Length: 185
Image 1 (cartoon, rainbow, N blue to C red):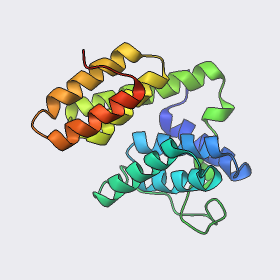
Image 2 (cartoon, rainbow, N blue to C red; image 1 turned 90 degrees about the vertical axis):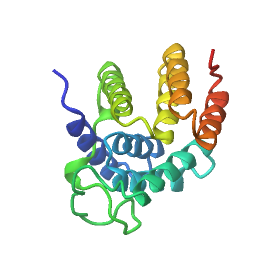
Image 3 (spheres, helix red, strand yellow; image 1 turned 60 degrees about the vertical axis):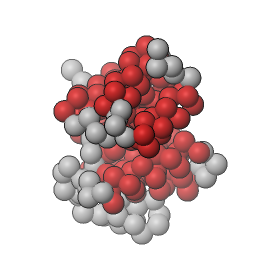
Image 4 (spheres, rainbow, N blue to C red; image 1 turned 45 degrees about the vertical axis):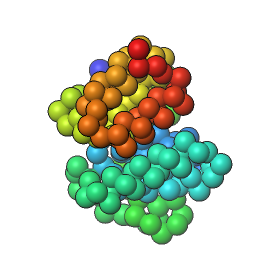
């Protein structure tokens, strides 16, 4: 039986306390927080990842998206745990000792199941709250990364239909889909 997503996020956060220079780990933690609607924590994790890998355009985009969600009043779905010491050595509030070590410590199959679960959770959230441009772009990107190009293309078509009355949003969605190699038809 797999641990729940919250437990896996806590394990990853705990692992990063002992491996603070793991850019991929911080990115995964940011991604995990983002998809569980813990945007403030996502910003902190992505900030550390960007600090460790400043040349990654995708990482910077993810960081900006998390900051945007926080500024929109997204905050965190759950209350942020109090900081215990410095996050990533920078003095900012960040993951606690109870929060870190999941994905990297998990066997690859379990990790894939957990990631698919979070992506499916994002898809379900978008079904209930579809007016989220960044959410659709993330869903398309996630599906492509998982090798689900047809499902990503279906998400692209659905997003275009949802934002047919918003040319700016539709343009952003099209640009993201173009970068991913997706076609609307």
